[in-house]
Each structure stands twice: as structure tokens, then as C-alpha cells.
Image (cartoon, rainbow, N blue to C red):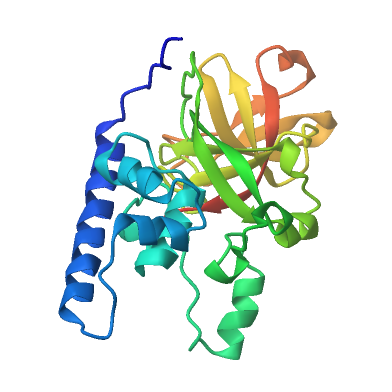
Length: 267
């Protein structure tokens, strides 16, 4: 039987693996210098993560033979005591580890946050948070992004309680990325967009991802007289980012993919 062919890791994924290995070597050195600690090894790290074939799995992540995913990154962050963003900025967008010294107010704010904190990560993870497919497609905050070939890169975790509060079902959701400046300051270039594909009817003043002749776009839909809809950019530069019409006569030109219910990214 032939062995399965592995897709080569990207340069970014290889950098993630190197950063993970560097942190592991640092923690191993610290354990060697502390007489009260046992010497850290890859097998112990894997056991802390709850993995079978513990040493082999950790080794594959650290040497770049297998790409990190979000769930593995979060478990390794707890096992080796690091912030996920320090290893993989792309996977860890918006994720923070739980700080037990945080105030009660901060704890209340965390409960309203869609991204899971570390206390939300028991082995029975599916019960507490949902992994949403993260596509490499872009939704242009501008003229349009062509996405002739779309692939799932990985997944992004969202709290199930938060999704329920939004009336969103995981099976209807996808993650995409914004491309361009036309929706600033609401949505910035490279922001993560959580899109609900079940919401395909126009809603006044809500933000949607649509297909167009130019590709995928993200715009605010604003109702106009006579039953028409305007595709509006939030950018105040209307000379560059002017309004466009979306009406019944243009039904073949634009099609709503879904409504944007959350965005995340750098400030």
C-alpha cells in the first residue's frame, strides 16, 4: 500500500513550526536548570495535550512535517505555557489565554467574546465550541476579489453559547477575509469575517458578502425608495468608494452569499 502524499507546508506554516520548536527548547532548558522539575521531553508535552503516540505527534508539529491546526495550537499553548499568537499569528487571530488574575468585569466581557478562552478547552471540546471552516477566499472591500479556486485552510473556534446568542448555527457559518479599504473603519484590510450563509435576504443597514461580476465583495445594504437596494461602502471617500445599486433588475449580477455577523482583526 502506498503511503499518502503529504501536501508541503507553506513558508508561514514552517515558521510556525520553528517558533514552536524554539519555545519547546527554551522550556526544556528551564526544566534542566530547575532542580524541582523533571526534565521536559516531547513525550511529556504530548501527554499534557492528551494525545496518543504523544512523542510522535509533537515531533511532527515541531519539525514541520504536519501543519499546526487551531485545536493543537491551543493545547500546546497550555502544555508549554505560551500565548498562541507567539507561535502562529494567523491561527491565533483574536485568541487570548485565560488570565486568572483578571477582574470580574473582564470575566464578564470574556463571556460575551466569541473566541474561546483557555478555560473553554476540555477534551470534550465540541460540546463547548464549534470549529468553523476557514476558507482562503477573499471578500473585497473594494471592487471585487476573484476566487476561482477556494480551499479550506483550517478552522476557527467560536463559543457555542455566543453563536446561540446570535441565532447562528455552526453548519451555516464560514470564515473569509476582507480585502481592501472600502469598508473602513468598520472592516479593515485582512480582517476575519464570520459569514452566516443562511441569511441571504437583504436587511437594511446590515453588512453582506455578495458575488458580482468582479468577484466577491463585502458591502452594507441600504434600502432605497421604490424597493431598490444600495451597495454602500463605509469609507467616507465617496469619490473612490461610491454607492452602487443592487435591485431586482440586477439579480443576475449580484447574489448574496451571507451576512457578516462578526469581524476580527488588528486595531
